[in-house]
Amino acid sequence: MEFLVTAAQMKQCDDYTIHSTGIPSMVLMERAALSVAEEMEKEKCDMSSVLVICGAGNNGGDGFALARLLDERGIRVTVAFEGRESSLTEETFRQKNICARCGINPCSNYREREYTVIIDALFGVGLSRTVEGKYAELIEWMNRQQAFRVAVDIPSGIQADTGRIMGTAVRADLTVTFAYLKLGHILYPGTEYCGKVIRRDIGITADGLRRASAAFTYGEDDLSRVTPRNPRSHKGTYGKVLLVAGSHGMGGAAVLAARAAYRSGCGLVRIFTHESNRLIIQSSIPEAVVSTWENEEDLIEKLDEVLSWPDVIGIGPGLGRGKLTQKIIRRVFERCRTPLVVDADGLNELALCQDLLFQTEAKVVLTPHIGEMERFSGRPKSDILNDICACAEETARRYHVICVLKDARTVVTDGSRLYVNTSGNSGMATGGSGDVLTGLICGLLAQKMTLFEGTALGVYIHGLAGDLAARDKGAYGMLAGDIADRIGEVMKLAQDNKQAEGIR
Image 1 (cartoon, helix red, strand yellow):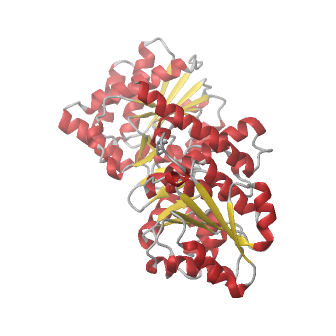
Image 2: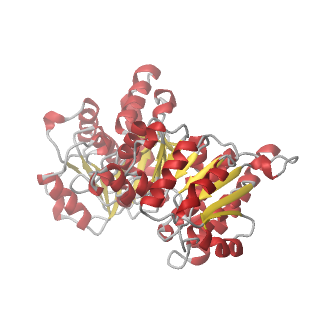
């Protein structure tokens, strides 16, 4: 697990380190500057001519310290100061003066030269206003130069909490950040501007971070969180999933969801679907139990027969739109007492009867993509994309659900905890990928994982399976079924990790 912090949380960590631990801010600046210099050397940057552009804030102080360190190493350095003298922070004022005493003074005509490396130490993580005027012009100039661009902490122009571009932003080739990754390094579109991101420890203590409120992401080590297999077990041990999926002639979505649920390790999967889908489902995934309805008159009776059976219910894939689906949704919400994962057409129809979310006894997971969230929330797409974390958190708090807001960076939240996914690739933008995710989450929850952790881990595993599929098929050629089939490989990796932990 790796924590992802906001600008305010990072400041809390800085302040705690400085005031409670006693490490001076100037020492942290020196360590930050040294870290950037070391990473530039590791990247084998051509440092025959380096420009460091410094702002008035502490990011600029890091830049002045870096310019001095590079000068001490015999590197030809030009320093530019872009800001008001009256706005200099105490530390940056001191670093600027140290540079002056070392003969390193800001250059006013620096744009008349060419550089092999340009270092961005202009704004840092504290930016909250749109970049305009001379600063916007400066950033555009930096982006036009044929130089390797290095960002100190975060490229100037990226909002550190959301990844939004505040008018314009530096397009870095390398970003060196300190202590923790910021949300803006991970979320789109900011992540596209960061280039290669390196996180360095510079002595900022973790005690200043209230971890319960910090966002986080998973790595492969977190696969060990998967519920362990019991040597003495049977299919009932690993839970039963009911998938309410597939309207007339729409059995493919049910197949994909069922395959993913089984690949996750759950014991039994039952599909409740229209009779017309029986043949395709039984031939595609014979392991699944199939229960069907054929006429609207017998639908509710047949549905009631299966609703008491499962440990987890997934509803929506391939279910279609209209009054019939609403009828199914209402009955499931009324009768369900187990975790309930709602996706696809289930979400579209739930948007029309949101009162069900306040009436049900089920613990609910909603899995909208951006378009479905637009319909569900009534908010324009642009607002959602401006801050997908805030949108998901608001939905989770309002309806008391787990919200999985699917995008290039899927986020999972219960309104207080926030998981941001970093696995996956563009090849997963294909029909049926969401059905696979629904089945996978249901399968993990059936194995008695907690609602939030099972959902977040399901999103991570889904992305890893997509990465394996892209490795074999390529992003253009992979199908949703390829993702489902690779889930087993990811689960094997989880098993191997657990065994390795046992050996240690």
